[in-house]
Length: 322
Image (cartoon, rainbow, N blue to C red; front, top):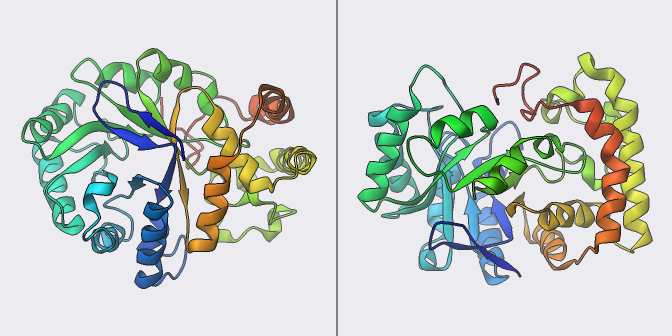
């Protein structure tokens, strides 16, 4: 396992992180037993994964609660990242949300506390005031954001430091390469990338749009409105699959490894229902991709990248990220 220090902090994290949305047992990812989630968390820690990401809104706090149980006796071995319950909260709300998360996680500090989504009715200065107080009081160690674009990053950093930005990023959805990734590199903001397997598309499990479960078609580029993209999406998947086969690796392993090799990517958040899925993620963390393979993967995905444009918000056609 490789590790990296988050700039302007004293926090070091594994390049592979465990995402825990699936622990929430909600309608997006389906049923999940808590005991299995706890077992998977323990296996991740034993494998050297030190960054674990969750959020207050995952199952209305259930993911945090399950993670808190899993970390009993192991809290000092991990970096816990969670996100606000309310989108872009005011000062008092962000403080209350953090205190609620601390209780659910059964810990007295959160390593990386992130604004989950934007709500521009609240001034950035007010939100940052709350985050800085939490930092001063020792309740959080680093300040992060999630789903922040160029304009919003430039605005919020006027009022305080931002250490990480969590963004969707994968071989089929490279929108942050246009502007956001370069800006984060320039500002020393580490990128925590989520959805490295593109809702399962980068596993090779689906050969056409109709095979994808409705619950996983929430991303805008899989909607009927963007049918013109679908042939190119599956052509791109086949291209990536051929590259993966040429180096004797599964498609999913290559997809995650690609993210890990990109400049500016601090850690890749990959979910795992069980230890078998976790093993595949860890295999990606151990895979070395040389420059030639990275360049070929870029060439393979460039056409789709350009067709999709600048919208880095994979959930909305009208981007909330700017």
